[in-house]
Structure formats: C-alpha cells, structure tokens
Image (cartoon, rainbow, N blue to C red; front, side, top):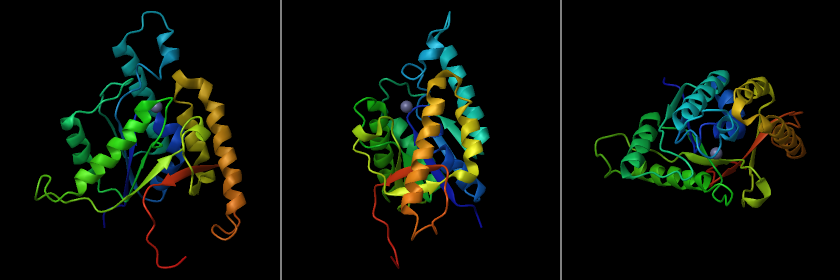
Length: 243
Ligand SMILES: [Zn+2]
C-alpha cells in the first residue's frame, strides 16, 4: 500500500520550518510522504540579513534561500520540496500557477494539508497563500476540472502558527507533541542563516506550546510530559465516531 501523504503550502521558503517543521519531521517518521510547496523564496521581504551583504542581487538571494530551504527540508526528512518561484511582497498567482498547484494537490492526494493563518495584516502574502490553498483544494475536488484525473477527497487544512500570534485571529484547536523530533526541527531552524534572529524565538514558541499541550493532555494524550509542541487551527470539522 502507498504511504499516507501530506502537503504544506508555504508562502515563502522558510515558513514551513518555523511553523510546522515538527509536524513534518514527525509524520515522515510515521511513514508519511510530506510534500512542501514554497510559492516564493521570500527573497524580497524575508531576507533582510542577506540584503545587507555587499553586492547582493535578487538572483543571489533566491539561490541562497533555496539552498537554506533544501538543507532544512533534508534535516526534517521531507520527501519532496518544490519551489514555484512566483515572487514575494507581493505574492501573486495567475490561473496557470493555480492550476500548477492543483496538479500537485491531485498528484499528492494529501491526507491533510498545512498552510498559514487566514488573517495576517503584517504579511499579506501569508493570508493570500491560505486563500490560494483553499481555492486550489476546491478546484482539485471538482470533477469538471481536467476530467478523468483522480479528484481530491476532503483533506483537513490545518493553519500553522503565525508570527505575532495574538493579532492574527488564529485560535489553535490542535496541539501536536513534537518532543521526539525537536532535534530535527532545531537543526532545520539553524539552516535558516538569514533569519538567525528567529531561532530562539521559535524555540520559545515550541516550549510554550509544549506547556499548552501538557495543560490539555489529561484526557487525550495520557498526561504525557510534552516538552515541545506545535499548535494548529483546523478549518473543517472533524468527522468522528466517538468523542
Ligand atoms: Zn513568510
């Protein structure tokens, strides 16, 4: 039987590392094949440290960001990482680019998807990526789009934790214990040389969510002493047989 799969739609090439690197590494260890799509490199808006170097060009920044993201993907055990190189600040997708993402979604047939918060006034690329993820998920479900292809089922879309969490209207309803794969996530974080100022910040986030996990884990995870966790907000209802 083929492995289960998951798909991450990341606006910029480092977002998947901070926000769901633990989920990626954990599911890879569980036998999932995780595909990461980076819609852009974040070359204009999320590469300040690189731009401060002498003689920097857009192409050099993109090359550097791609290398960092590939190294991080390797650290997390990512099965497949794809770079759409659509530009950032602003990120924009025309219909062809959307159909390209639909093709990936149909090919991967993800058990679940991951993307950004639905609201992000600091970084409109992020909320735009989520809108696109939902739109392309919908197109991938349409029998009339490229008839004959296997249509998409109804994978959950989990929204990973944004920056400046409290201002994003993001409310987690799921905590994932990533303690066992924390070393992989930290290694991936340290691949992001251009954003060193975020390394400890996202370590703190993981510790805080670990605390949050412990506070809530009594009935659900046996009171397990999670040290690091990631939070997610799910878009769609869960369909259950038992509560
Ligand atoms: Zn970003």
